[in-house]
Image 1 (cartoon, rainbow, N blue to C red):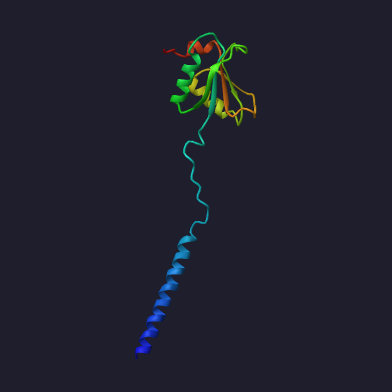
Image 2 (spheres, rainbow, N blue to C red):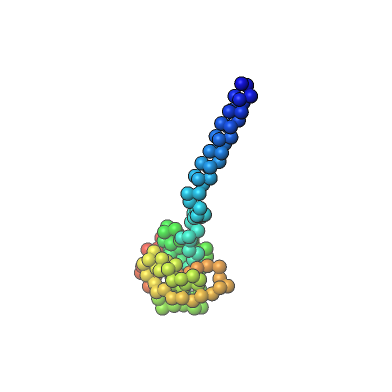
Length: 140
């Protein structure tokens, strides 16, 4: 009798183990697509340099403040007097024009053009022209 009871317990345990394995496999097969999670901030990141081509002090600084408030990553700020422009130019250096359009929307002025340069490690160059002085309020 003891042998029969032990045999029944072993068969019951084997059935439970097999059922657990089948249930586990069935639950994991529902969605076999790989899970991809976005890296925060990577997709929307735009790397920008802002260059003041006018003689008006503070334009690049104020444009930088405006861009950074909107979440745009300004990585370089400076002056470039030798290649002055008659109005603000937003030059897309890599990728599509959407980065330039985003910068233009934040600034509220400038014309977007493509001027790819794979040597530069940035997406957009902003060359501030005289129109920027009227569009930006300068703060000390």
